[in-house]
Image (tube, rainbow, N blue to C red; front, side, top):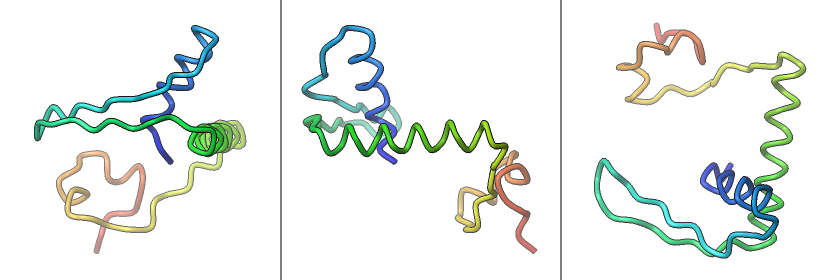
Length: 85
């Protein structure tokens, strides 16, 4: 899901007009990325946010099946997935 577009949706809801551009600043590694906001991205984000809300209401909090390097260092790993054997 394009999480960065959730802010653009909030902007549209607050001000009544669509954001035309979003800019993401990477504070850890430096640099930034600019993206134009279009209808397809907006609809995809709305669908993902709606799905996430429905999953919360239905208490469907599926664990993540994959395991990555960061998971081995995370204190909350038992919440989102089973610990690796």
